[in-house]
Figure 1 (cartoon, rainbow, N blue to C red):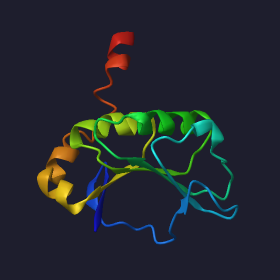
Figure 2 (figure 1 turned 135 degrees about the vertical axis):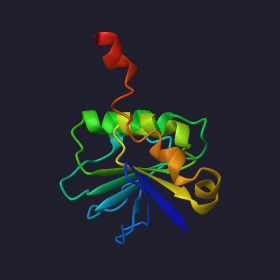
Figure 3 (figure 1 turned 60 degrees about the vertical axis):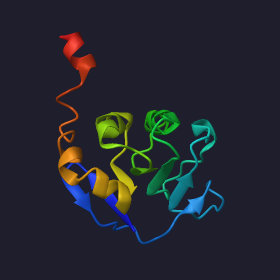
Figure 4 (figure 1 turned 90 degrees about the vertical axis):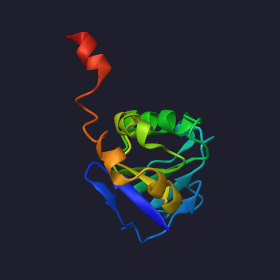
Length: 133
């Protein structure tokens, strides 16, 4: 089982449509991207409603780069990080453009909702905005 994390806490997964691996089919509404995806090679169409990016390790930050690049290319659909994202990384995930994080039950037990919620006010702690004045 998996748990979804967003700014309001833990939630059950509400996406029931499924995912296409690497955008294999033209009629995909949800893409499942590995962490080594080149964001410029992702075909973004109006039909794509969800993109899920894999984080194979909490030390692998390529997913943040992919998310930011997709947002800069104009993707406005739902963007989900999946895998080994830690509560400490939640604010960075949101700043990179993710709407939510999908974690397994074991990680949810080790890092309960209050640890994620502590970082839910991700916009208030943006050091770049503080530096600008």
